[in-house]
Length: 173
Image (tube, rainbow, N blue to C red; front, side):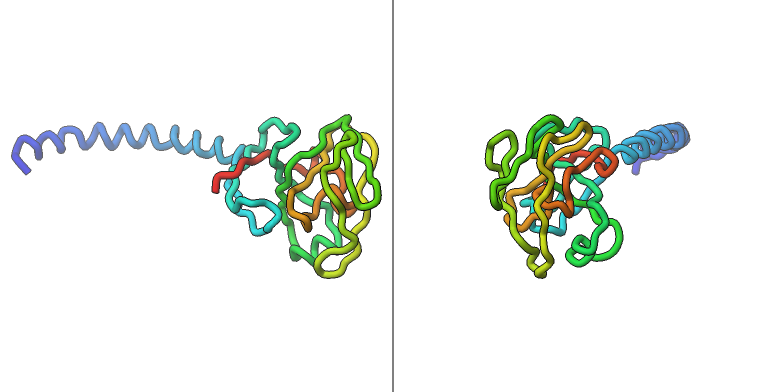
């Protein structure tokens, strides 16, 4: 390094260090604020085609949104997914005010067929017909295109309501 370059670096070193010390807390605060409202999620289930999702805890939820929620505690969820908190990721198929109906094993929202139900899980645990009638305010009807997806088709999940929902996500990988 030349003498000029060496002197130039020494002259700038202190202002750069001081600038870094001032900007680091500002940058850290922004990252911390962002992290409180967002999360990176990994999908371990075949019910969604993607394996990585970006969660926004304050995103607007509407028909077609991908939401992540805590399923109701049950023997069935524990048998299939293990003990402890499990997040489910499903598409919103029905919104408050939509009407859910069943004809045999077929499920309809506002008269349009959206899915078919199964009688039991792959482990042989009985599944029960999910809720029917108008979807209440603050709740959603969820589902996936996966035939064996555990979703609102079944009473074991039912309508997914605001208190269960962590946020809306989008697939990134």
